[in-house]
View 1 (cartoon, rainbow, N blue to C red):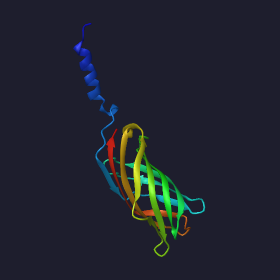
View 2 (view 1 turned 180 degrees about the vertical axis):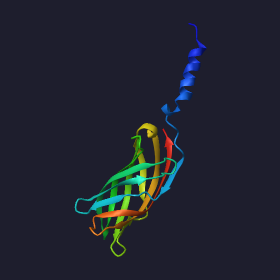
View 3 (view 1 turned 60 degrees about the horizontal axis):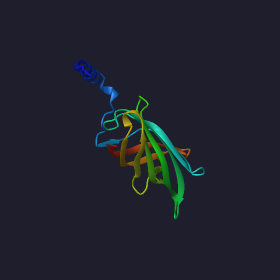
Length: 168
C-alpha cells in the first residue's frame, strides 16, 4: 500500500488550524480571590447554597460558581455546622469543573458574619467536562460572608480559593 504524504500534511494543517479541538493542559495551580455572590442557609433544613460570578479565576478567566452543601450540628458549638457537598465552576462555554467540598462553618452573631471554621473548606476535583475533562486535584476555599437582616442570606465579603490540579 502506497502512503501519500499529502494526507499527513493535511491532517497536521487541520490540527494547527483548529487548536481548540484539543483540551489544554491545566496549569499547576489556580489561585483567585474575592468571588462575588450570595449564600443562602437554612439551619432547619440543614442546607447551605450559593452562587455568583468570578471575573478572573486565576488563569481560568471568568467563571460562575454554585454550591449545594448539607449541614450538620457540631457537638458543643451551637453556632457551628459541619458542611459537605459539591461546588461547580462553570465557564461561559458550559464546560464545568465539579468539586467535592468538606469543612465547617460558624455564625458570629456579634459581627454578623458567616465564616469557615476551622479555617477553610477542603476541595477535591470529582468531575469535569470539555476543557476540564480528566482533571484531578485538591485545594482549599476560605470565605467570610456578611449576614443580611433576614438572618438566612449572606453576601461574600472575603474569599480565596486555591486549587492544585493535574490531568489523568
